[in-house]
Image 1: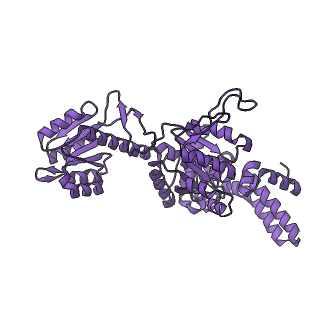
Image 2 (image 1 turned 90 degrees about the vertical axis):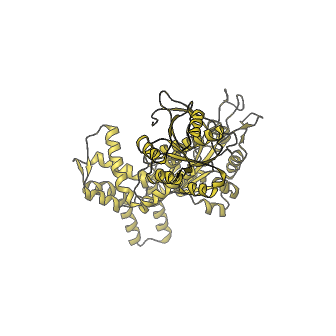
Image 3 (image 1 turned 180 degrees about the vertical axis):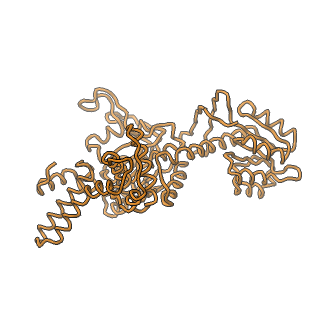
Length: 477
């Protein structure tokens, strides 16, 4: 019997050291199904009594009958004896794994069969329970199997939810995301602006054991230095002027969940040290308090900067780098995975038309091919922006190559033309350098919708320095 609606209460160890966590399932009329295959009726009766209060138990006393019930009922968990008369329980494991059924197999046997049991595990069995069967051990194994099964179903459900891809590179990224999600290790997501780092961070959280807790994002470049500690660690009433009430910080809000540090490359050395201590020891102290609070957060960080280079230049702490960089996920730019452009464009087209209630439009094949030829310096974010503009400017039901030329050329050709003119001019090096800097800053300002903070970040300078350069070059804002 397959589960459709259920509610679970998930228990975690405080330290996160346990290899499993149990689920107490409260199901309205349906429970997880467990098929027990054994040729000894006494064992079947004993196991059924052990499990019937918690699971929907089905029994089978032979190899052939067990295979039939697996085919027909597709149980969530199959418990099989390694020895079934003249038949071999390993063949049951092969059948379940080879059929790609969404089921888990637990092998039951005496410890003397250890070599065969190891073979079963290698073939894909979830666990082994030794005879004589301990009720507690068997229940724990089944609950772990069900938890693993539930996680697999979540993965199958969400891996295409907003993460649209066709390329091998992104397929490898998703596989790494799945593996990272099953651990509590810190994850560092690297990639250019617009590649979807925050979406991947959300995916890691949604697939993890922490998915029922908070996902808290911190934009490291947007927090003023003087507010850093109060934002991250919270403050007590009266801690400073204007603190008329106590407030939780991001770490406390994310307790038990995931803390996402976006643009971590923009953190000062001082702030890096404070975050490092909080993560390493799981302890924070609110501003204005002397009490230590224990927090349990899973750290996911992201940046478009070359962190390793920053470590060498001593603009990023080496100890902080090693603490956040246990698992590294690199998101390739769109120009390196052009197979993803077409499915992403079609997805954004359908999504925008549906959400905005607009008349139906489609791409011509030539238009899609033209999009695939473009490099998209702004990556997925730029592709989505271009698709939205195409929906608006296209006068027909079919978006054509002419429509795409209008959007792309109008956006980038002015800057390209200015560079060409500059190269062909006879200006002095000092004047040419100044003109190029102006063009370069204007290009990045437009790319970032005239946002000073984002533009400064993409240029690798402070916002105040960018404003000074703009004034000197005569760029208005």
